[in-house]
Length: 407
Image (cartoon, rainbow, N blue to C red):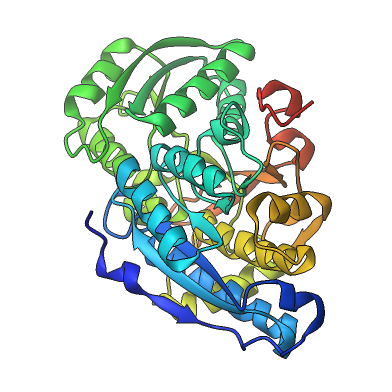
């Protein structure tokens, strides 16, 4: 198994516990949290090193709040190479060798489903802040897992509903050929049909595809009004750039829609090519005073780059986990997650947040439209808020997911 040198990072961030320090003394002297991310692949910009920075910020802020009596925290990091077997092996080694208490990030749904199983077997916490598959709160739900930021159901319903309402009734999907893409297409297709649209076809492209020309030709020949990108990261950027070069939307008869686009994707595309795109996100750095203040702190550590919703989710989920572990006097996975479910969270980045029985963190979502170059005041000023999707409407109804934890 190859683990990137980055995986050796261990950051001791908080003061050692006070001897005999009451309830906190029942927590291990060191709480280790592993950031399992994509450091070099298609999701490195939207997660990667930025996720490690966010986890470090959460640990530091917890230290300030907990004071000298709080536990010591170490942040570990590794590159999962977008391979489920590699991700699962890293997590097993982290637990068996390093006594890691929780794993966060994991921006690949196939890897996340493998990690979810390992952490359930080991009864350690999975803070699934970056995987999109809604199966993590459906048939694969676990008493040890919280899915924090978004999922395919939320993305599909937020964007598909708006696009069909705007006249885009016939759809063709260009889909990443693994668990995430398949789940995103499934959930978006269901919503398109529910609101009166139709599906003209789909095509599956492997992860890390560089040439999308044959897929785009099929999309063009379908005659669909909407060509939906059910992929993410570098794959979504490459597909969108090649669609522009291909002249896919030049006739005005077809529209390109990204079902999972991040701020870093829009930055890579440029506003000239991305302007007018509708997208659903859980977080935007310029949303309010609290998001702006935290994002400026983050940017100062990441070369001026503003955070994505995944990176914001790492911060928020790690901070909530540490508070819950301290309150539960435990790092046993199901005990900490149960504490998180009992305690409503007033999150500075995602707003009021509750965690349901299926492990879904419920908060508002937002529909944005990408600005034109003339509307933007500078780099990272990319979105105009179109609508706020209330927490009660943003995620799949609890009874519809098929989670065995739900009565």
